[in-house]
Length: 188
Length: 211
Image 1 (cartoon, each protein chain N blue to C red):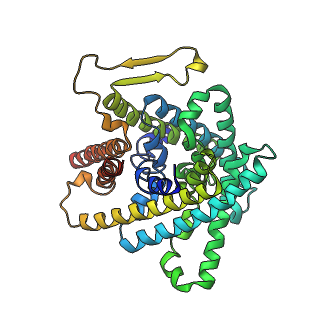
Image 2: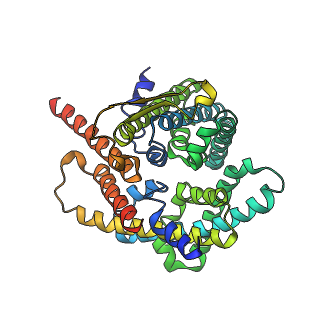
Image 3: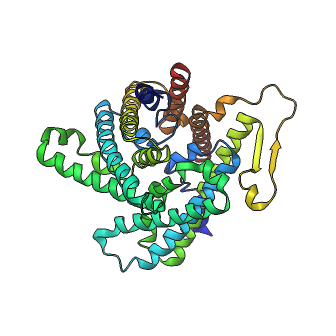
């Protein structure tokens, strides 16, 4: 598989929300406004790329030589939460404008399964460093794309007359189902 | 008894609290995957709630969350190693969703909101209730998706290396309606959960109307 194919696959055909169900909680919970959806997507992408690089290096140069790969979940979670803290501090001190956009969402990411899921997939699939980078970037952008499209759909839906028992989460899940169908048929 | 019932009905993690949806959607293509996942979450919940309620007075307030996360991850890793040894086929099916229990919001949520403020007995009962509620909802979704999507019910297949025999049943032998393959795909997972949620909302509304 070429790098370009890998990028398109990870972003569209095997989108992490619509086919791997990672990061569903922010997808259903926070994506009601366009700006907040974009903020969430960008924060996730940044943290995802940073923590993927670090976990990849740790896994291949520390855990495999010392034969302690069973520690990966523990170590990955530590790396991700410290990455979240670090990017929070850096953004707050050096990019005040970005802080206004992302500040609210960064702390929420620490328990986002999309990031842990991607870092685990990276090491499970035996990617090379470049492949890993492309795959992670594709996944992050795919996450942002879907969460953004979904938020625009939901903004329109507020004016629709939905039966009472379908309001809120049920109609959101059914919308997601139609999106998943479209993505798997159109790009697949 | 009341705590357990509360976990299954009033605070059902899937249909009422809507927590931990990743595994709910991902592993429910077969009935077997669904109940094994439910069982794993139940075990992790039991272990962490039990330990958290014991150590709640020793752990300082400002490091509570990291300590609990480490505790949860350790029990998940132990469970993963056990499954890998005894039922490798299932370990393969559950894939990355098994380590992902570590960041499942149900487990951390219960540790923080219940186990860290209540007695050992109450936290264990709460873990059993919430775990059963989660497992039962997963089984329901798994059953619906497998019957509609593959016209089968898999009770024991991957686990057969452990129990010694297989149990896979066909539901309707002569039919042209089933299987509806879309229910095996990711789209079917979203659709099933959405429709079931709407159905439970409908029941709840009707019951409160009668009252």
